[in-house]
Length: 368
Image: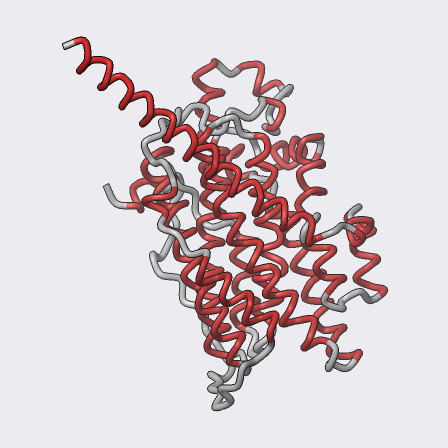
């Protein structure tokens, strides 16, 4: 079965062409570069991993309850539509929600791969090109993982959301070399990290927990890369140039906030668009989810030097202004620690099973 056959809705043309502008830049300066960025490049090389080996794909996933998250997390919960649903209907709804979320993760990761390759092409500094090359490989691995999870475990995909596609288009069409950094490393990656983290911390199922924890370990490096490169560059820009970047951030944040509603899922279950929008806007879980989604973006935007009055007002309007004081370094350290803890627990369990198997074989041999 082809991927196209698994789409809930027709994704349209199988190839999306985004006209790109801007220069490909070569650097003949092969000196040592910035120490912090080269250290991140070394870490990027050291931390490469194989999704076929590190993730336990033998773990079963129930398509009717892929994540084990509470019913309250679904916007239809408590409505007249929910009350009329059978248990099978509710299982189908869980499957569709998971498919929609992870499909957007998949499309976003492909976008990140293209943007990382674009940064290799357009960024003027060789040390940044080096690191972006490792990130391109990371993003390819993430797209591979989400694609496999959706196809083999869920059996269903959703097309790219309109708002995510719009942000990807704006990011890739801009000729300024720093815009793929800002659009992808700060906005889309920052949003993805928060979304991954919320599901990672609430799912009761081992396979999605593994996937999200290991992907987040990579993404922590990517956000750090964007912060380093843009913080240095934005110190050189004029106030007018900084305001242009802030306008891009404001528009992108509103786009992403609106992207998160998943109205496509509800409409597939016969809920009219206006009612679906009302249910999502009244969902307490969605309100919390939206707020947490900006926990990675707001402190990063502030850290790189984009903190003008209009941007601050936009974050007040979104109810996320206070997140500017969050410790991004602490969040990233926790992401790395959780992935390493999962590895340690898994390897300990495998070692214990091997030890028990050997002991049983010895005992059987002695009895014989």
